Amino acid sequence: MNTHHKSILDSAKSERKDIGNRFYKWRSLNPSVHNEVSLQEIHQEVFDDTDCISCHNCCSSSPPLITTSDIKRLSIHLGISKKVFRQKYILEDFNGELSFNKVPCHFLNPDGACQVYDIRPEACRRFPHTDEADYFKRPKLNAANTQVCPAAYKIYKRLEDSIPV
Ligand code: SF4
Ligand code: SF4
Image (cartoon, rainbow, N blue to C red; front, side, top):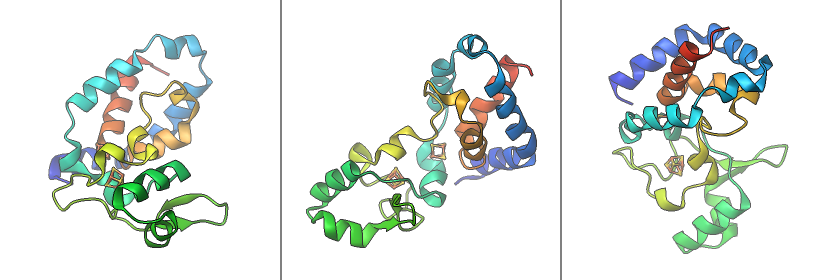
């Protein structure tokens, strides 16, 4: 992560409590208020202005959840069995949830690029979930993501201007 992204996350950290409170207030608003905001447009504008390769903080610090479809796709790509893939790369928690077993991610190149970008896990494609229809229903996840993802924090700041509470 470069100094630009680090300074954005420092700001997010200093506002952590306010961010959490605001997301919970936003959730309690009438959905018509959410619909007045063009979340997709804000998401697109922020990501157009974000260099994920130079950031790669999600890949360095947060192991994504992995689905059985992800395992099938990635193991075929690597030319290994699903069993071997699970042994090498997957951690299963007490709930049966699967995730990669280490950070930084096995598939993160030193330059910040993803070695399996075109077939990356669904959770990697969706992170930080800022363009999803149920975004405002997930205050805890959204607040946590602002602490990891500079783009998620920038989207939050755009919403802070648009939805006063
Ligand atoms: S698979 Fe790729 S996008 Fe997903 S965490 Fe690993 S390096 Fe990042
Ligand atoms: S999605 Fe967020 S945390 Fe991940 S690389 Fe892009 S800006 Fe960084």
